[in-house]
Image (cartoon, rainbow, N blue to C red; front, side, top):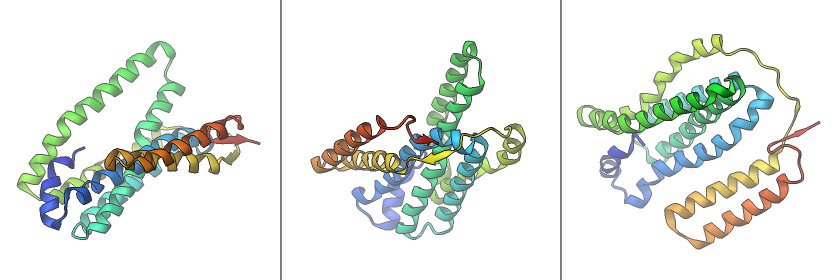
Length: 221
């Protein structure tokens, strides 16, 4: 992540131990992981356009909150939760767009292009973050996602209004899946076996549950 290069500076500013500072990344990963799993299926019911614009706005909102109130650690963590929830819309919905609108003979090229862009971002991101932290302040890194707000008018114009599937969201399935993801990530950061056990139980219940519904996160009426 682009903010990783500044974690030592953040730890110094807040006088926090590494375990506490790691929550800056963990908070983002938690909501990002859950959001990525949820956005794709919600696109059938709410539409790609609405969800993508929602994700951009939420991501930018979290970025601004984190920048403005960056001197409060708890608010910074909250901002990272919000950022992750918004940022998750991009990978999930881009995959849906490719699968739904790109011809099968060109889908491989599209996925390859997306992979290249992601790899380039992962390579360039830390360098950009390092430059910002060196010559300005690490809090300015939080503002980088705000740049995506300029895409809103273009996306609103380019993305067509879609036909959506009417139905009720499978809240129970979302809860089991989300709790499973949360405890698995907590296990990966703390290595507590109890977290892994809870995660496995939730995923098993989730798998059993989805076998009873006709669609993973959407019960058609």
